[in-house]
Structure formats: structure tokens, C-alpha cells
Amino acid sequence: MKSEETPFVGGPLDGRVLPVLLGPTGHPPKVYRVPVPDDAGGAPTVLVYRRVAAPPGRRLSLTARWRYEYDDTPGAADRSRLKWPWSKPSGTAS
Image (cartoon, rainbow, N blue to C red; front, side, top):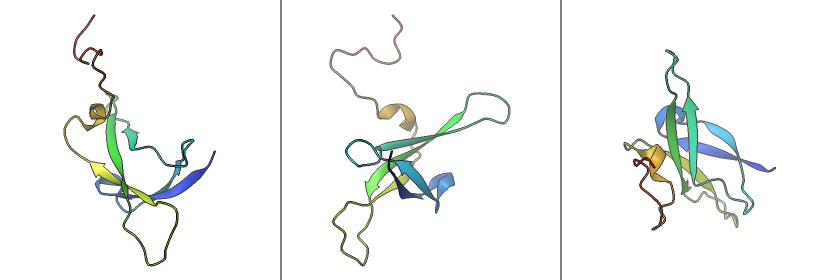
């Protein structure tokens, strides 16, 4: 599997460059979730980063460059799910 060094902007991972696995199309995933374990043993906190196009550099590149930006909006971890017309809302029990 191929990976690409991808920079992270904002949040706890600000300024870090981490290797991210590429999908079958050669692009990193649109949403990158980082589970952070709770010290008290509770449910882990999930940090959500969204893929955006990186600003162009000084050199011309034929491949797209990406970076991840921190998404701190409430409910960001659940927002990226596909919503089909025939699907039930996630809060209902069957």
C-alpha cells in the first residue's frame, strides 16, 4: 500500500506531517479520524480532520497535493456519513 506524507493544520496535530495511506484512486481519505483514549478509561475522544487542497507551492506539480484541517464543529465525527433517502435517522432504534 502506498502512503503520502500529509501535513495537518489546526487542532492537537497542528504542524505535524504524518504518512497517510492512499486509496485505490491514489488520494488520501476525505475524512481522517484520530481516536484519543481517555485517561479515566471512558469513551475515547475522536479528533476529525477534513482533506482540503493544499495551496500551490513554488514549483509546478502535476499531482494534487492535500492537507488536513481540523474540524472542531459539534457532531463532526458523525456528519460525514452518507444519507440515503431510505435510511433511518441514526437516533432511532428499531
